[in-house]
Image (cartoon, rainbow, N blue to C red; front, side):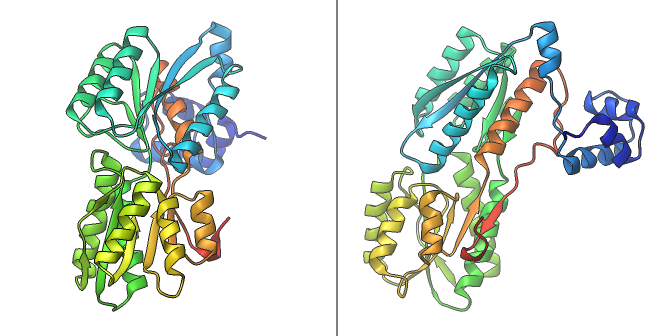
Length: 341
């Protein structure tokens, strides 16, 4: 049975009127009371359902998801979650479209965003390339009254309305603490494997990782970042070359995608002589590698939660309603071989 506003009021110990004020962003609620209501909303799993109201007034949303087109297991999962949302969209009176652009291509992303602005939409969710021309395109969208949510990777100093993704700096710091503890007192080098420094999530993970290793584990030497564009074949080639040039590599942090290529190299080395490996995103490949002792830990984000969050935020913005920040927080999950779901 779905929780109701009555359940929220009972759990938070407030009146229905107070719950209504919080849900609709109206004044007259103390910050401590607002926090109690928001905590109750999260604890109960309450999701505001605007479908009935929109059905009554004939409202239909038009949303567009702009996704990178590449052979990336996580992005494939993300697209599948959007496709699931499309299948559910008709009863909720929403039209959702997917537009694919080449990965890490700022110019192609700008062209797609400008085309969406010209065609008109209620909202756009995009995996951002953090470039000035993309920020300018997002500015044009918001000036046209189109809500914008960045998905997975954020866009710095922009007019976007919301970011649906994990705290990537915290993810990098977490990876560094895991790496330092796995390596213990071993002297050696750590290789960092990224997709591209053009995307903010990879930069933030790198910054978080380097800050903790430098402060907490100064004995570990860091090699220059390997940028392999999340391409499994390129990852395989570049990791193999890095291991040939630096046979003392003791750890690898894969902060992007393309892990199928990394895993192929690790299988060649075997479990006895491989480095410590920490990767991102629990996919079929990384799950198998965890189970086979080829990877030590995986940091994961839930693409389904991110897509649902983006849609909720775009609906709220289209209706002029507030976003419940606590409800839209995307958590970081840490998986080892022993706690795989």
